[in-house]
Image (tube, rainbow, N blue to C red; front, side, top):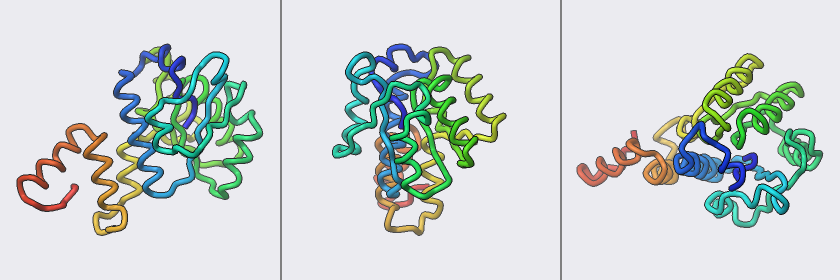
Length: 196
């Protein structure tokens, strides 16, 4: 989770900020629910960009974001060491701005052999074109675009996975828009717990 900070949000116009905040928290809760190692980063938190979104910090209350000066998080050794410590070759990135911090980190990680995914609707750029062109450039480099809800449901994969069924449907009900309302409706009307 790269630089979901107030000052960065002020300059984001490719996505409605409330939608971005909702999607970012939905993504964070999905990662936490499935015990996916998650790193929070900030850039110039005390001198320019401010803290991360409070609702994102609330998902990981005990985690202190790694603050850096570089636009490319991959140029900060603390970030690279933390990513490498997890021993996985898959990396899911979301952040502000798509065309700077997301793009540079994604390209750098892919260059070093990581299978990289960019969560496009939990990221934002200074313009729609800047966001779109950055995503297109990442696709050309072999990076896979996904959405936060797609990520949640790919992690769940099977509604028979009872250990994460409730958390998945709870996240969808709170952050999933019309899909979440559909779950609420079906549970109210039919008394069932079907989430699909």
